[in-house]
Length: 470
Ligand SMILES: [Zn+2]
Image (cartoon, helix red, strand yellow):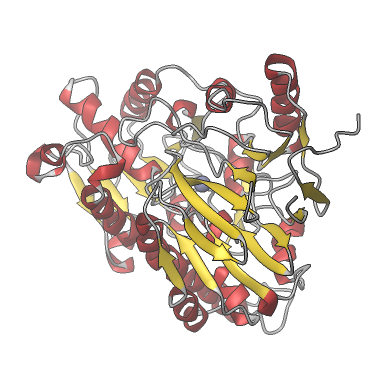
């Protein structure tokens, strides 16, 4: 019998950020994901605490995908002494080469601004990590194709399976032990089955212990985001105001462009200027064009004027000066800018300028975590705090849910139905408590599995026949 392995939930248990799972087996320790806590202040503060392990003793990190809530703690791990390998897919490696330096830059700029304007409670305000830490981290990256298992540490081997969601995103299939290994599977973030760009999430045949995400574990997406998007855009044009879209540079931006282009081609909306105010989004759209193996678009649909992830009057904004030049424009237009949950980035300037104007529309295309300005807007806040001052919200705020990169409740169940036998234990992670509980209940009812939400900080056994206390 294989020596018992254990698993500890160190983030994304009861929340959607800070994804971090510590696996211990025969003196070896590895992390599945290494994400940053985002959103609520009490969560963000956790990034500053000493972790529950010694980073020097971690042999390797296996990343599911590039989003910062799954990868953004890596530079800090390295700053604190980690020297092992960082495993990921090729597209994830390319993405974190862009996302991690950007994360460091945002933190350095925020600290700088807080010091300059004196609105930080800390003196001096410090960034969590800087560009140097990011460089060190990127040096440790090792890439792997989907479907080919690789050594992680000791008797642990992993294999990536496509999860949809964003470019490079994977479920992690970890085999622990030499003979008759125990299978620990982490879903990663599961994508949608109707994404216009990415392929469907792939099924995983079996798991002894399964971690499944539950971001939308209690919700169903709108069947047709195109119609909703069409209505929102036409109403905004009618009012004569701008549409501001806070969007992640990875995934959301590309799918939005695809949808807007389709509406333009079908003459369902007027052709508006679409400003992509994110050099990162520009770079990442290029990556989508290179990694054709991961999506449904043919190369011919990605080239020249025919490119489906480009609108007819698209303008790429590179510099801050160009970004500020949008401020005086007073006409219907679409501005797509990060960050996706309005926690930082250039979207803040656009919102500070346009939220007081009742003609403005804020279009929310993706999940907004608790404690973010995006969530406050979504919940109808009368004013939000930007760069040390309160900005009144007179704009219309609309959520178009079908544009999300996450599977909804039914789609999660569809992914779970791909397992050929029930796992001995299934833990629901990466969801706020109501979502995690709703999914857990549904899986218990429909699939009759041993399932419950994971508890933050708890340690569970990774064995073939888990005791399941009722
Ligand atoms: Zn994600």
